[in-house]
Image (tube, rainbow, N blue to C red):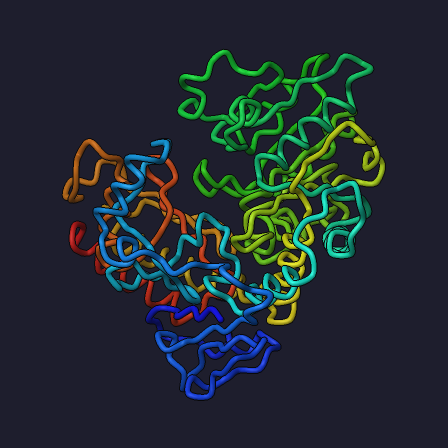
Length: 484
Protein backbone atom coordinates (compact mmCIF):
# COMPACT_ATOMS: atom_id res chain seq x y z
CA UNK A 1 0.00 0.00 0.00
CA UNK A 2 1.19 3.51 -0.77
CA UNK A 3 0.63 6.17 1.87
CA UNK A 4 0.90 9.76 0.71
CA UNK A 5 1.20 12.39 3.40
CA UNK A 6 0.07 15.88 2.47
CA UNK A 7 1.94 18.85 3.93
CA UNK A 8 0.88 21.52 6.42
CA UNK A 9 -2.08 23.79 5.79
CA UNK A 10 -5.41 24.88 7.14
CA UNK A 11 -8.30 23.06 5.47
CA UNK A 12 -11.59 24.53 4.35
CA UNK A 13 -14.79 22.69 5.01
CA UNK A 14 -16.16 23.85 1.68
CA UNK A 15 -13.50 21.82 -0.10
CA UNK A 16 -14.30 18.76 1.93
CA UNK A 17 -18.05 18.99 1.41
CA UNK A 18 -17.68 19.16 -2.36
CA UNK A 19 -16.38 15.62 -2.56
CA UNK A 20 -18.89 12.79 -2.43
CA UNK A 21 -16.49 10.27 -0.87
CA UNK A 22 -16.61 9.44 2.84
CA UNK A 23 -14.28 11.46 5.06
CA UNK A 24 -12.18 9.42 7.49
CA UNK A 25 -10.79 10.85 10.72
CA UNK A 26 -7.02 10.59 10.82
CA UNK A 27 -7.00 8.10 13.63
CA UNK A 28 -9.42 5.79 11.81
CA UNK A 29 -7.70 5.79 8.40
CA UNK A 30 -7.24 2.19 7.33
CA UNK A 31 -6.72 0.29 4.12
CA UNK A 32 -9.60 1.27 1.90
CA UNK A 33 -10.49 2.47 -1.58
CA UNK A 34 -11.75 5.71 -0.09
CA UNK A 35 -9.59 8.81 0.17
CA UNK A 36 -9.11 10.40 3.57
CA UNK A 37 -9.66 14.13 3.11
CA UNK A 38 -8.71 17.02 5.39
CA UNK A 39 -11.31 18.36 7.79
CA UNK A 40 -11.56 20.63 10.79
CA UNK A 41 -10.47 17.82 13.12
CA UNK A 42 -7.98 16.25 10.71
CA UNK A 43 -5.24 18.79 9.84
CA UNK A 44 -3.80 18.38 6.39
CA UNK A 45 -0.33 17.70 7.78
CA UNK A 46 -1.79 14.51 9.30
CA UNK A 47 -3.63 13.61 6.11
CA UNK A 48 -3.29 10.02 4.89
CA UNK A 49 -4.37 9.22 1.34
CA UNK A 50 -4.81 5.48 1.00
CA UNK A 51 -5.04 3.65 -2.31
CA UNK A 52 -5.77 0.02 -3.06
CA UNK A 53 -2.36 -1.62 -3.45
CA UNK A 54 -3.36 -3.78 -6.40
CA UNK A 55 -4.59 -0.93 -8.60
CA UNK A 56 -2.56 2.07 -7.46
CA UNK A 57 0.99 0.75 -6.99
CA UNK A 58 3.84 3.20 -7.33
CA UNK A 59 1.77 6.08 -8.72
CA UNK A 60 3.69 8.69 -6.75
CA UNK A 61 7.06 7.55 -5.42
CA UNK A 62 8.22 9.36 -2.29
CA UNK A 63 10.20 12.50 -3.14
CA UNK A 64 13.93 12.34 -2.54
CA UNK A 65 15.33 14.37 0.35
CA UNK A 66 16.82 16.88 -2.09
CA UNK A 67 13.33 17.96 -3.15
CA UNK A 68 12.03 18.16 0.38
CA UNK A 69 14.85 20.12 1.96
CA UNK A 70 17.21 21.95 -0.37
CA UNK A 71 16.03 24.96 -2.38
CA UNK A 72 19.42 25.53 -3.99
CA UNK A 73 19.72 21.90 -5.03
CA UNK A 74 16.32 21.93 -6.72
CA UNK A 75 17.22 25.12 -8.56
CA UNK A 76 20.49 23.49 -9.61
CA UNK A 77 18.57 20.56 -11.08
CA UNK A 78 16.72 23.03 -13.31
CA UNK A 79 19.82 24.98 -14.25
CA UNK A 80 21.63 21.81 -15.28
CA UNK A 81 18.77 19.94 -16.97
CA UNK A 82 15.87 22.22 -17.98
CA UNK A 83 15.84 24.49 -21.03
CA UNK A 84 16.09 28.07 -19.65
CA UNK A 85 13.10 29.45 -21.54
CA UNK A 86 11.39 30.86 -18.45
CA UNK A 87 12.41 33.71 -16.19
CA UNK A 88 11.60 31.88 -12.98
CA UNK A 89 11.17 33.38 -9.53
CA UNK A 90 13.28 31.90 -6.72
CA UNK A 91 10.45 29.99 -4.99
CA UNK A 92 10.40 26.17 -4.98
CA UNK A 93 6.90 24.87 -4.29
CA UNK A 94 6.11 21.50 -2.76
CA UNK A 95 2.33 21.38 -2.37
CA UNK A 96 -0.86 23.37 -1.98
CA UNK A 97 -4.41 23.22 -0.75
CA UNK A 98 -7.30 25.50 -1.56
CA UNK A 99 -6.10 29.02 -2.32
CA UNK A 100 -2.67 28.46 -0.74
CA UNK A 101 0.67 27.11 -1.92
CA UNK A 102 3.61 26.03 0.26
CA UNK A 103 7.28 26.10 -0.61
CA UNK A 104 9.69 23.39 0.46
CA UNK A 105 10.74 25.43 3.49
CA UNK A 106 7.14 25.28 4.74
CA UNK A 107 6.30 28.92 3.96
CA UNK A 108 2.70 29.60 2.96
CA UNK A 109 1.58 31.85 0.08
CA UNK A 110 -1.90 33.07 -0.79
CA UNK A 111 -2.20 32.20 -4.48
CA UNK A 112 -4.00 35.00 -6.31
CA UNK A 113 -2.29 34.01 -9.57
CA UNK A 114 -3.94 30.61 -9.92
CA UNK A 115 -1.20 29.23 -12.15
CA UNK A 116 -2.10 31.96 -14.70
CA UNK A 117 -5.89 31.42 -14.49
CA UNK A 118 -5.57 27.63 -14.54
CA UNK A 119 -6.34 26.46 -11.00
CA UNK A 120 -10.08 27.06 -11.19
CA UNK A 121 -10.81 25.07 -8.01
CA UNK A 122 -7.56 25.88 -6.24
CA UNK A 123 -5.02 23.28 -5.20
CA UNK A 124 -5.57 19.65 -4.17
CA UNK A 125 -9.32 19.89 -4.59
CA UNK A 126 -10.81 16.53 -3.53
CA UNK A 127 -13.27 16.44 -6.45
CA UNK A 128 -10.41 16.57 -8.95
CA UNK A 129 -8.53 13.88 -7.04
CA UNK A 130 -11.66 11.74 -7.05
CA UNK A 131 -12.16 12.16 -10.79
CA UNK A 132 -8.54 11.30 -11.53
CA UNK A 133 -8.54 8.21 -9.33
CA UNK A 134 -11.90 6.87 -10.46
CA UNK A 135 -11.32 7.40 -14.19
CA UNK A 136 -7.76 6.04 -14.05
CA UNK A 137 -9.19 2.82 -12.67
CA UNK A 138 -11.32 2.51 -15.81
CA UNK A 139 -9.33 3.78 -18.79
CA UNK A 140 -6.87 6.64 -19.19
CA UNK A 141 -6.36 6.76 -22.96
CA UNK A 142 -7.87 5.15 -26.04
CA UNK A 143 -6.90 7.52 -28.92
CA UNK A 144 -9.46 9.30 -31.05
CA UNK A 145 -9.99 6.30 -33.31
CA UNK A 146 -12.70 5.27 -30.84
CA UNK A 147 -15.67 6.68 -28.96
CA UNK A 148 -15.85 7.12 -25.22
CA UNK A 149 -18.55 8.68 -23.06
CA UNK A 150 -16.60 11.39 -21.16
CA UNK A 151 -15.63 13.24 -24.34
CA UNK A 152 -19.17 13.15 -25.70
CA UNK A 153 -20.60 14.36 -22.40
CA UNK A 154 -18.05 17.16 -22.08
CA UNK A 155 -18.76 18.36 -25.62
CA UNK A 156 -22.49 18.31 -24.86
CA UNK A 157 -21.92 20.37 -21.69
CA UNK A 158 -19.83 23.00 -23.49
CA UNK A 159 -22.29 23.28 -26.38
CA UNK A 160 -25.13 23.77 -23.91
CA UNK A 161 -23.21 26.66 -22.30
CA UNK A 162 -22.48 28.42 -25.61
CA UNK A 163 -24.88 27.55 -28.40
CA UNK A 164 -25.48 25.11 -31.26
CA UNK A 165 -22.21 23.77 -32.61
CA UNK A 166 -19.54 21.14 -31.98
CA UNK A 167 -16.28 20.82 -30.05
CA UNK A 168 -12.78 19.57 -30.77
CA UNK A 169 -10.51 18.61 -27.87
CA UNK A 170 -6.75 19.09 -27.61
CA UNK A 171 -4.19 19.64 -24.87
CA UNK A 172 -3.50 23.35 -24.51
CA UNK A 173 -4.62 26.86 -25.34
CA UNK A 174 -2.25 27.36 -28.24
CA UNK A 175 -3.39 24.06 -29.78
CA UNK A 176 -6.96 25.30 -29.52
CA UNK A 177 -5.93 28.52 -31.27
CA UNK A 178 -4.11 26.54 -33.96
CA UNK A 179 -7.41 24.76 -34.56
CA UNK A 180 -9.11 28.12 -35.09
CA UNK A 181 -6.40 29.17 -37.55
CA UNK A 182 -6.92 25.98 -39.53
CA UNK A 183 -10.70 26.37 -39.41
CA UNK A 184 -10.40 29.86 -40.87
CA UNK A 185 -8.04 28.76 -43.62
CA UNK A 186 -10.29 25.84 -44.50
CA UNK A 187 -13.26 28.23 -44.63
CA UNK A 188 -11.55 30.59 -47.06
CA UNK A 189 -9.37 28.18 -49.00
CA UNK A 190 -11.40 27.86 -52.19
CA UNK A 191 -11.55 31.65 -52.51
CA UNK A 192 -7.87 32.16 -51.80
CA UNK A 193 -8.58 33.88 -48.48
CA UNK A 194 -6.24 33.08 -45.58
CA UNK A 195 -5.48 36.24 -43.62
CA UNK A 196 -6.55 36.61 -39.97
CA UNK A 197 -6.58 40.07 -38.39
CA UNK A 198 -5.78 40.16 -34.68
CA UNK A 199 -5.05 43.06 -32.33
CA UNK A 200 -2.15 44.89 -30.78
CA UNK A 201 -1.24 43.70 -27.26
CA UNK A 202 -2.99 40.38 -27.89
CA UNK A 203 -1.50 37.03 -26.90
CA UNK A 204 -2.40 33.83 -28.75
CA UNK A 205 0.33 31.37 -27.76
CA UNK A 206 3.93 30.49 -28.55
CA UNK A 207 3.82 28.22 -31.59
CA UNK A 208 5.07 29.83 -34.79
CA UNK A 209 1.51 30.64 -35.86
CA UNK A 210 0.63 31.70 -32.32
CA UNK A 211 3.41 34.28 -32.14
CA UNK A 212 2.57 35.51 -35.64
CA UNK A 213 -1.00 36.08 -34.44
CA UNK A 214 0.14 37.76 -31.22
CA UNK A 215 0.30 41.55 -31.18
CA UNK A 216 3.43 41.84 -29.01
CA UNK A 217 6.86 42.31 -30.59
CA UNK A 218 8.69 40.75 -27.62
CA UNK A 219 7.32 37.25 -28.31
CA UNK A 220 8.27 37.44 -32.01
CA UNK A 221 11.87 38.54 -31.52
CA UNK A 222 14.36 35.97 -32.78
CA UNK A 223 11.81 33.83 -34.61
CA UNK A 224 11.52 35.80 -37.85
CA UNK A 225 10.34 35.49 -40.54
CA UNK A 226 6.82 35.30 -39.20
CA UNK A 227 4.26 32.82 -40.50
CA UNK A 228 2.37 34.82 -43.14
CA UNK A 229 -1.32 35.57 -42.86
CA UNK A 230 -1.59 37.64 -39.68
CA UNK A 231 -1.82 41.40 -39.12
CA UNK A 232 -2.59 43.44 -36.01
CA UNK A 233 -4.66 46.58 -35.43
CA UNK A 234 -5.59 48.47 -32.23
CA UNK A 235 -7.95 46.75 -29.79
CA UNK A 236 -11.48 48.07 -29.16
CA UNK A 237 -11.42 49.90 -32.50
CA UNK A 238 -13.96 48.64 -35.05
CA UNK A 239 -13.00 51.19 -37.67
CA UNK A 240 -9.34 50.19 -37.51
CA UNK A 241 -10.44 46.60 -38.07
CA UNK A 242 -12.63 47.60 -41.01
CA UNK A 243 -9.82 49.57 -42.61
CA UNK A 244 -7.45 46.59 -42.33
CA UNK A 245 -9.66 44.13 -44.24
CA UNK A 246 -8.19 43.06 -47.56
CA UNK A 247 -9.35 40.66 -50.31
CA UNK A 248 -7.27 37.98 -48.54
CA UNK A 249 -8.92 38.43 -45.13
CA UNK A 250 -10.90 35.43 -43.89
CA UNK A 251 -11.32 36.04 -40.15
CA UNK A 252 -10.98 38.39 -37.19
CA UNK A 253 -9.63 37.03 -33.90
CA UNK A 254 -9.73 38.80 -30.53
CA UNK A 255 -9.71 38.08 -26.80
CA UNK A 256 -12.86 39.00 -24.89
CA UNK A 257 -10.54 40.33 -22.18
CA UNK A 258 -6.91 40.78 -23.11
CA UNK A 259 -4.87 38.97 -20.48
CA UNK A 260 -1.15 39.20 -21.23
CA UNK A 261 -1.90 42.54 -22.87
CA UNK A 262 -3.05 44.14 -19.63
CA UNK A 263 -6.47 42.82 -18.48
CA UNK A 264 -8.42 45.01 -20.90
CA UNK A 265 -12.05 44.01 -21.55
CA UNK A 266 -13.69 44.45 -24.94
CA UNK A 267 -16.46 47.05 -24.99
CA UNK A 268 -20.00 45.97 -25.88
CA UNK A 269 -19.87 48.25 -28.92
CA UNK A 270 -16.69 46.56 -30.10
CA UNK A 271 -18.09 43.05 -29.86
CA UNK A 272 -21.35 43.91 -31.58
CA UNK A 273 -19.55 45.99 -34.19
CA UNK A 274 -17.19 43.14 -35.05
CA UNK A 275 -20.11 40.73 -35.39
CA UNK A 276 -21.84 43.06 -37.84
CA UNK A 277 -18.58 43.63 -39.73
CA UNK A 278 -17.92 39.90 -40.05
CA UNK A 279 -21.45 39.27 -41.28
CA UNK A 280 -21.11 42.06 -43.83
CA UNK A 281 -17.73 40.88 -45.17
CA UNK A 282 -18.29 37.09 -44.83
CA UNK A 283 -15.55 36.73 -42.24
CA UNK A 284 -15.33 34.36 -39.30
CA UNK A 285 -15.34 35.97 -35.85
CA UNK A 286 -12.96 33.98 -33.63
CA UNK A 287 -12.66 34.45 -29.86
CA UNK A 288 -9.58 33.42 -27.90
CA UNK A 289 -11.09 32.63 -24.50
CA UNK A 290 -8.19 30.59 -23.18
CA UNK A 291 -7.60 32.94 -20.23
CA UNK A 292 -10.81 34.94 -19.91
CA UNK A 293 -13.27 32.06 -20.33
CA UNK A 294 -14.66 29.31 -18.13
CA UNK A 295 -16.59 31.49 -15.66
CA UNK A 296 -13.63 33.72 -14.78
CA UNK A 297 -15.66 36.82 -15.61
CA UNK A 298 -18.75 35.58 -13.77
CA UNK A 299 -20.28 34.02 -16.89
CA UNK A 300 -19.07 31.02 -18.85
CA UNK A 301 -17.62 33.27 -21.54
CA UNK A 302 -16.44 36.84 -21.03
CA UNK A 303 -18.51 38.15 -23.96
CA UNK A 304 -21.63 36.89 -22.19
CA UNK A 305 -20.76 38.99 -19.15
CA UNK A 306 -19.75 42.05 -21.18
CA UNK A 307 -23.00 42.01 -23.17
CA UNK A 308 -25.38 41.49 -20.23
CA UNK A 309 -28.35 43.85 -20.53
CA UNK A 310 -27.07 45.26 -23.83
CA UNK A 311 -29.55 45.41 -26.76
CA UNK A 312 -28.63 42.62 -29.21
CA UNK A 313 -26.31 41.19 -26.58
CA UNK A 314 -28.21 37.98 -25.98
CA UNK A 315 -28.19 37.22 -29.71
CA UNK A 316 -24.42 37.69 -30.04
CA UNK A 317 -22.50 34.55 -30.95
CA UNK A 318 -18.98 34.23 -32.35
CA UNK A 319 -18.20 31.64 -35.00
CA UNK A 320 -15.60 29.78 -32.93
CA UNK A 321 -14.10 29.94 -29.42
CA UNK A 322 -10.83 28.52 -28.08
CA UNK A 323 -10.64 27.28 -24.47
CA UNK A 324 -8.10 25.80 -22.05
CA UNK A 325 -6.58 26.86 -18.69
CA UNK A 326 -9.47 26.72 -16.15
CA UNK A 327 -11.19 24.01 -18.21
CA UNK A 328 -8.96 21.35 -16.65
CA UNK A 329 -8.20 23.02 -13.34
CA UNK A 330 -4.52 22.09 -13.72
CA UNK A 331 -4.91 18.93 -15.78
CA UNK A 332 -3.88 19.68 -19.40
CA UNK A 333 -6.86 20.00 -21.73
CA UNK A 334 -7.83 22.44 -24.44
CA UNK A 335 -10.84 22.70 -26.70
CA UNK A 336 -12.46 24.78 -29.36
CA UNK A 337 -16.15 25.19 -30.13
CA UNK A 338 -17.38 25.89 -33.66
CA UNK A 339 -20.79 27.37 -34.54
CA UNK A 340 -23.26 25.09 -36.28
CA UNK A 341 -22.86 26.32 -39.89
CA UNK A 342 -19.11 25.67 -39.78
CA UNK A 343 -18.89 22.79 -37.30
CA UNK A 344 -18.18 20.14 -39.96
CA UNK A 345 -15.54 22.07 -41.94
CA UNK A 346 -12.73 20.11 -40.31
CA UNK A 347 -13.72 16.65 -41.51
CA UNK A 348 -11.82 13.35 -41.17
CA UNK A 349 -8.12 13.72 -41.87
CA UNK A 350 -8.02 17.54 -41.65
CA UNK A 351 -7.14 17.89 -37.96
CA UNK A 352 -6.14 15.60 -35.13
CA UNK A 353 -4.30 14.96 -31.88
CA UNK A 354 -3.09 11.84 -30.09
CA UNK A 355 -3.79 12.88 -26.51
CA UNK A 356 -6.60 15.40 -26.93
CA UNK A 357 -9.93 14.63 -25.29
CA UNK A 358 -8.72 11.57 -23.41
CA UNK A 359 -11.13 9.86 -21.00
CA UNK A 360 -9.03 11.08 -18.06
CA UNK A 361 -8.86 14.72 -19.16
CA UNK A 362 -12.56 14.85 -20.00
CA UNK A 363 -13.55 13.22 -16.70
CA UNK A 364 -11.64 15.92 -14.81
CA UNK A 365 -13.18 18.73 -16.88
CA UNK A 366 -16.66 17.32 -16.32
CA UNK A 367 -16.08 17.15 -12.58
CA UNK A 368 -14.88 20.76 -12.54
CA UNK A 369 -18.03 21.88 -14.38
CA UNK A 370 -20.12 19.95 -11.86
CA UNK A 371 -18.43 21.65 -8.89
CA UNK A 372 -18.68 25.10 -10.49
CA UNK A 373 -22.38 24.70 -11.10
CA UNK A 374 -23.22 22.94 -7.84
CA UNK A 375 -21.34 25.44 -5.69
CA UNK A 376 -22.47 28.46 -7.77
CA UNK A 377 -18.89 29.55 -8.43
CA UNK A 378 -19.85 31.83 -11.32
CA UNK A 379 -21.79 33.92 -8.82
CA UNK A 380 -18.87 33.63 -6.40
CA UNK A 381 -16.55 34.98 -9.10
CA UNK A 382 -18.85 37.99 -9.47
CA UNK A 383 -19.23 38.69 -5.77
CA UNK A 384 -15.69 38.04 -4.57
CA UNK A 385 -14.31 39.55 -7.77
CA UNK A 386 -16.29 42.74 -7.14
CA UNK A 387 -15.02 42.82 -3.55
CA UNK A 388 -11.43 42.37 -4.74
CA UNK A 389 -11.75 44.99 -7.48
CA UNK A 390 -13.37 47.52 -5.13
CA UNK A 391 -10.57 46.98 -2.63
CA UNK A 392 -7.95 47.47 -5.34
CA UNK A 393 -9.67 50.67 -6.48
CA UNK A 394 -9.57 51.96 -2.91
CA UNK A 395 -5.85 51.22 -2.78
CA UNK A 396 -5.38 53.07 -6.08
CA UNK A 397 -7.05 56.14 -4.56
CA UNK A 398 -4.99 55.86 -1.39
CA UNK A 399 -1.65 55.26 -3.17
CA UNK A 400 -1.91 56.98 -6.57
CA UNK A 401 1.86 57.30 -6.69
CA UNK A 402 2.01 53.49 -6.92
CA UNK A 403 -1.26 52.26 -8.49
CA UNK A 404 -2.51 54.17 -11.51
CA UNK A 405 -5.71 52.26 -12.32
CA UNK A 406 -7.67 49.02 -11.88
CA UNK A 407 -9.57 47.06 -14.51
CA UNK A 408 -11.11 43.66 -15.24
CA UNK A 409 -14.19 41.56 -14.57
CA UNK A 410 -14.96 38.88 -12.02
CA UNK A 411 -11.82 37.09 -10.88
CA UNK A 412 -9.72 38.46 -13.73
CA UNK A 413 -8.52 41.78 -12.37
CA UNK A 414 -5.41 43.84 -13.02
CA UNK A 415 -3.72 46.85 -11.50
CA UNK A 416 -1.74 49.24 -13.67
CA UNK A 417 1.27 50.57 -11.82
CA UNK A 418 2.18 54.22 -11.95
CA UNK A 419 5.11 54.95 -14.28
CA UNK A 420 8.55 55.32 -12.77
CA UNK A 421 7.75 54.63 -9.11
CA UNK A 422 10.60 56.43 -7.38
CA UNK A 423 10.96 54.35 -4.22
CA UNK A 424 10.14 50.86 -5.57
CA UNK A 425 12.78 48.52 -4.09
CA UNK A 426 14.64 45.93 -6.10
CA UNK A 427 16.95 45.61 -9.06
CA UNK A 428 16.36 48.67 -11.24
CA UNK A 429 17.20 46.62 -14.33
CA UNK A 430 14.04 44.57 -13.71
CA UNK A 431 10.55 45.75 -14.68
CA UNK A 432 8.32 47.32 -12.04
CA UNK A 433 6.00 44.31 -12.12
CA UNK A 434 8.84 41.86 -11.47
CA UNK A 435 10.11 43.98 -8.59
CA UNK A 436 6.60 44.23 -7.11
CA UNK A 437 6.07 40.49 -7.55
CA UNK A 438 9.24 39.80 -5.56
CA UNK A 439 8.04 42.09 -2.77
CA UNK A 440 4.67 40.34 -2.72
CA UNK A 441 6.36 36.94 -2.58
CA UNK A 442 8.34 38.07 0.44
CA UNK A 443 5.02 39.01 2.07
CA UNK A 444 3.40 35.67 1.17
CA UNK A 445 1.27 36.65 -1.85
CA UNK A 446 1.36 35.41 -5.46
CA UNK A 447 0.22 37.49 -8.43
CA UNK A 448 1.07 37.39 -12.15
CA UNK A 449 2.98 40.14 -13.98
CA UNK A 450 1.76 41.18 -17.42
CA UNK A 451 4.34 43.26 -19.22
CA UNK A 452 6.12 46.07 -17.44
CA UNK A 453 3.24 47.81 -15.65
CA UNK A 454 0.30 45.41 -15.11
CA UNK A 455 -0.10 42.97 -12.22
CA UNK A 456 -2.81 40.35 -12.69
CA UNK A 457 -4.97 38.65 -10.06
CA UNK A 458 -6.40 35.36 -11.42
CA UNK A 459 -7.31 33.37 -8.31
CA UNK A 460 -9.41 30.20 -8.02
CA UNK A 461 -13.11 30.57 -8.74
CA UNK A 462 -13.84 29.40 -5.19
CA UNK A 463 -11.74 32.14 -3.59
CA UNK A 464 -13.39 33.23 -0.34
CA UNK A 465 -13.98 36.87 0.59
CA UNK A 466 -11.79 36.51 3.68
CA UNK A 467 -8.96 35.35 1.40
CA UNK A 468 -9.51 38.31 -0.92
CA UNK A 469 -9.39 40.54 2.15
CA UNK A 470 -6.14 38.89 3.24
CA UNK A 471 -4.69 39.54 -0.21
CA UNK A 472 -5.72 43.19 -0.15
CA UNK A 473 -4.17 43.70 3.28
CA UNK A 474 -0.95 42.05 2.18
CA UNK A 475 -0.80 44.14 -0.99
CA UNK A 476 -1.40 47.33 0.98
CA UNK A 477 1.31 46.46 3.47
CA UNK A 478 3.75 46.09 0.59
CA UNK A 479 2.64 49.19 -1.32
CA UNK A 480 2.62 51.35 1.81
CA UNK A 481 6.28 50.46 2.30
CA UNK A 482 7.37 52.33 -0.81
CA UNK A 483 4.46 54.67 -1.57
CA UNK A 484 3.31 55.77 1.88
